[in-house]
Length: 324
Ligand SMILES: Cc1cc2nc3c(=O)[nH]c(=O)nc-3n(C[C@H](O)[C@H](O)[C@H](O)COP(=O)(O)OP(=O)(O)OC[C@H]3O[C@@H](n4cnc5c(N)ncnc54)[C@H](O)[C@@H]3O)c2cc1C
Image (cartoon, rainbow, N blue to C red; front, top):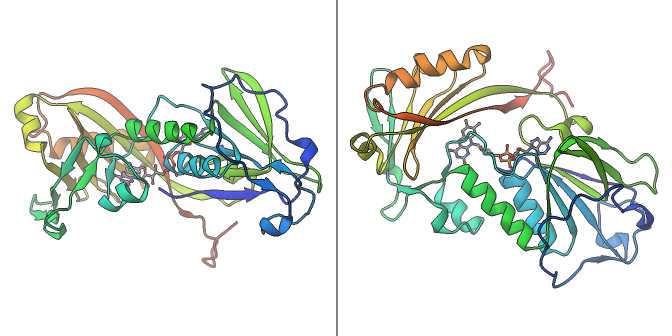
């Protein structure tokens, strides 16, 4: 969860950092204990000019997923005036939500966010042969299963508690500085009303379909589609998944991907993806993973449907070189 594009303004100036129209104040950020004061370009190797003096650097982070929230938290904790723009703070990205154990420590994610500590992970072949992947887990290891809406909202709140200002808005465009005294201008909408703010640093963490990447010509990317249903199972069916995650492979599941059944707090997440049959993702899902696990999830009730694009690799030209 780390795809961040970092773009520094080469040209920073103290007089141009006020938002054109400020967003409605989010819940009051706690007092910062310290500020980073930029007094010399030497302390900021990415800045080419020396005209930042005695003021707080301002950063705009676009996208409040794990990458954006973590970046916003680190920036705000370092005393940088930080705005975190997220278009849908109450939503969630379709994601299996299986977190490797090391992530919990690395990102200080409390165990209370974990729905289930799964120690049985089965990979199931086209002919329904099962490989018990969990044999690779150590005796005290587990796969943490959580819901992305829970994780993302926690990470955003933590960024806010360090002083980042969350803006619930849709980022629309970025003006790149054209002179040594100009800042970035970040355009966004709140409930259809156009706003903008000035920033010295912009971090694009707006996911697979990043508008920030487009604005800085960071290249074209091929993408795949994924779909996931959250399904509440009858108790006796849910018992199968108390401590079990399943991954299914085979051409019946997807021409180029896999399917999964991951247990959550009181339901399972069933999903798949494809890059080759994007227009038929629903059909791939219904005739694939849904069909393969039909018996195991029978009687279940769909409580949520999620679909998303996700990025594959950079487009390549005929010589195989990456385009930028
Ligand atoms: C189907 C699927 C299953 C996956 N399963 C797992 C798994 O089990 N475990 C795992 O570790 N990883 C999994 N991943 C990968 C994981 O989801 C990503 O690595 C992770 O979400 C990337 O985090 P991010 O913060 O970079 O981007 P995202 O999580 O995509 O966050 C981007 C954020 O930007 C916001 N945004 C986008 N555009 C705008 C805009 N214009 N204005 C404002 N906000 C905007 C979005 O609302 C979103 O909140 C899965 C991915 C997919 C597609």
